[in-house]
Amino acid sequence: MQRTAARQWLVATGIAFTLVGPLAAPALAEPTPATSAYLGDALLAPGSSGDYISTKVYSAERMSNATITVRYDASDISGFAQLVEHDEDDWECRVAADVATCSADLVDLDESGVPVGFIRLVPKGTAAPGNTGKLRVTVSAQVSGQNSEEAAKSSTEGQVTVGEGVDVVAERLADVSAPTGASFTQLYGVRNVGDKTAHGVVAEFRSGFGIEADGKFANCRYDGDTLRICTFDEDLLPSKGYGASVPLKLRPDTMAPGSQLVEVTWMTPAQWDLRKAFLERNGYENLVGQPGSGSELDLVEGPTSAARSQKQSVPQVDTAPAGNSAYSYVKVTGNLMADVAAVGDTAAGSEGVLVEVTVGTTNKGPAAIDESFGNVDFTVPRGASVTKAAAACAPIVDGEPILEKKGEPGYTRYVCSNGWFLPVGGQSLHSFTLRIDTEVPDSKGKVELLLEGTGATPQTDGDTANNIAYVVLNESEASAPTTAPGVPGTGGSDDESGLPVTGVGVAGIAGGAIVLLAAGAGLLVMVRRRRVRFTV
Image (cartoon, rainbow, N blue to C red; front, top):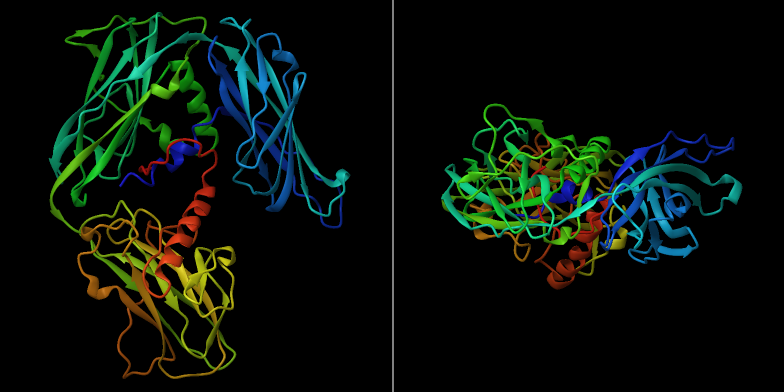
């Protein structure tokens, strides 16, 4: 149940960035798209292992299979920080003096932005709190066949600051049990294991779709009824532990029996400022949330509130953030199932006519689905051929999915990957354009929802009788009714992925679709942490 919503959280785990305007493209018969670069303000702790950074690059028009070169100039910060060579995810970075050059091939750029040039920024032994300077970046994006003068170029810079090191860790969360729709309390704990007082702390919360806030506090932020952030200005003394008791509740459409994940990550106020700037600039305002009202949520050491902290001239930064997160599961009791059903379609036309049909999955409720809800096996009706296939659908040949041909037309059978979340009434739909080659009355193509082996639990589907539908071309009045698609809901899309299994070549489809799932995750930039599914 914890598989989807942290997507945006994981996207946002990188350093915050600063946007610069796009460079004008050279005047060409086919102009190179303009690009812009977005780098990060970084906060380092003396004596720490530093952090991974990257630059985000945007292209005004889509650029496919581009060669990207990123040049980092650290000369302004060379007195206290350095860039360290780092190879990961097809990026190769080499450092010479204060300059690092990173490159990669076959990168797709678009207006939503793609992180490039992953490298490590590390404080030197001379680093002291208050040190600051600029890290400058230039990016070149070149499509195969262009000469060097035609490459799209952009540049930016980020501020690098050395803060005062502190070390807080998350306390283990206790597991909770509650029925669907019930309220409960979760205790979130944090301990200062360092030798310096931490002047304030910020908690960032993530949870499964079924978890809502039960009341809203003035020092916390919310995305609708979902708790996102709480800011505490108490001093956390060395070797002391503190806790906040947070009232939560389960949504009335939470599937049961089941479980919902709750998680917290603690950080310093200065680290939250950088993260907040990144989230807001990159379109993740929902992860920042809106302030609550009423009383404040207290962070206490036992029964006694800690002293209020004073504003510090030097920002603080956690020296060991790997221990700052903790999670637990809320066991959902009761019996509330969902019913997923296959979605078919009808179309009519004479020989040579192009028609559009839609296949997919719908959730008939009464529970929302916060886990895998299967995938769709679509067989094209006789007498028709596919001229345009949905992006999330891979052709099946001899019982095996051909994942590298995902979205390609011309095949007679496809497996379409669904996502990991489907609300009540929501639909995951995939569109195909068919050419009617031969007019065949009542020509049927089967649409089958595959559940076995996808991670879907028995309660994911309360009625398996509706897991098959049909696409019918030139339907006669005597033909059986077909489950037709409605208005798409907020569930999966053509770009979301899952794990198809069963039918002919079950093992091949299942194994191949795992790769398809990984490919779909490419929509999430900077997914370099543990993958967890959360609401967004």
